[in-house]
Length: 199
Image (cartoon, helix red, strand yellow):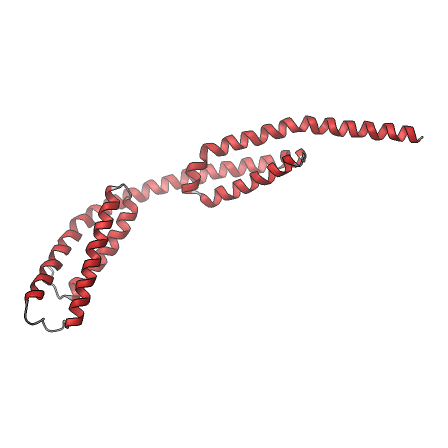
């Protein structure tokens, strides 16, 4: 009786081992397929969908741990969900690229206006600063402290415009335009503070 049970136990273990061996190949193939699919989109995902990429990589790591633990059932069961996650990640990357292209087009158009207006404003402010610096008396409504503050703000404005222009030349139109917009606001404020007549 004991011998029969032992034979049955050995047979059952053999079947289990054989079953695991049969599942190892498909589990390995499934992981390799997902890793290849993920590699195709990983670089773009880091830029356009970093949070989604982290989620997919976390799921993949869990399945790899299951594979190392020889839990091939879990690997095969989790593969379809991970494949869907990779597909969703690819869609997010495509959407991110389209959004970036649209934002770039808008930025380039806005930059054209900024690059025409801001240098004129800088020229106008510079002329006013030069005139007031030579004047013995500041006009009514502008104190000496206010004038000094305005000159410091103007230097900052010119520096930021130089940075924005350099970024645009380097190809980062979106960031350059955002800085340029800030610079334009600074210029408008200085025109008011220095009581420059708008033409």
